[in-house]
Length: 618
Image (cartoon, rainbow, N blue to C red; front, side, top):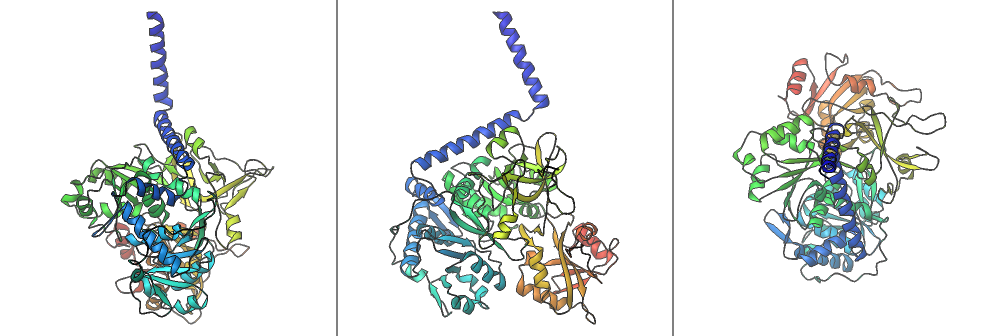
């Protein structure tokens, strides 16, 4: 008997040694898989009780914990019950005075504030489909967004009414009703909401709503793309509900206080952040906008234990002067995406024992990764267990066109470990793709067919990833005509069209370039001047000020006599991207956007050195 026990013990020890040597992350992979399955079972159990949608999850918490603080915004503290009642009042006003009903599409243009959530939920209670608009949006893009999603009405924050100066009459003439979240308005043809709110019923309005289909549309969230103007991505009910599990999967708990500075029109804030708090029953401390100098002071003031980030946010924090508050806080968890490895290390070294939960996700689809290990750098893991939850593959693609390479039989090829490949995921119930509103061609372009067998359909993320030999996944680059800067996606086509309106420019090619010390890519434009015209830097600056949000402005200009194109007249940007903005490499004249002087100035070698060294901040 003792011999058998000894043999068994030796066998177990041997297996553990083999596991630690060849599969060191086996237990972490397994435990995360179990956590995901547990969350999934809990979601299915709620659905059997009739709690199916994002809104119903909130209403469940409003019944279970009505007195618990849900939203803390400046001096306001709104409990789950408060938000439920206020959203009911908004729903009744929007129904009786605005005539909104089930199935109507309503655009929401508001800054971060508690009433963003109350108006949103009020619209959801009427069965409306809400379209979140970027509050940096300019007039041309605003009209496009409203048209593309088919909005019947626009609800706008009182502090953003200036956005409508140039387009209000066109909107109202086009049948779009405009309602401002204020007690009064100086604008004609604009209705007000807050003056009617207190007299509205606090009860949820009765609606003849049909049975919810999890695959039907819940939201429109706009993304930048190759079409030039923002695309209205359809967000299904099932995706919205799945997003609510993010904070729990990262390790957040019901007693956490979550600090949210990201804009609510982003999926990261509205679905992962607010939704994550709802699923946990946690408290969200909402900020109007991010402030690096105020960040740790707020963490102390509000007893923050969790915060959401994008990589830029963390970089701003590590570049701030040291303060006593940065080590006196109670923050234990930071969850987000886009964190560079060097900033990650400095963040941990400087700000104490904070668990970083780096992740990757998309607006249009549910495929995503979470780095639940202590490894610095990866966005997640490609283990056997993770592929059971949400299948995905990395495909070989052409280095010039980024189109998947296919075999003689027409099927795609998987990359080997250690080789960058295009991330794709099968379109399924748990990874739906509803496409873009009003753009069937662009929707179809995001799909790959006959990938591994005839008839299969995969979603093309447009992102290059690398899986190393330990099964960690690293984000390498975003392909196509978009790049990311200051936490926002920038459409090169949209910027090109804006620059093309200037009468002294003959041709424009916009692209992103890497800048040492910054996440993402800064905007740069190769331009061709018309004959007998010079570069008018002041006029170009003022044009950008009127037409594009600051994150989309090209920081660098490269003046050329012509632009390189392919045989099919597509712009060739590879060489431009590779050469960047180094005056020692680029022979053509270079210019830099000097925001303090409100113009573009010649980019000298000294100025280049100051930018690269960080003396001049972008």
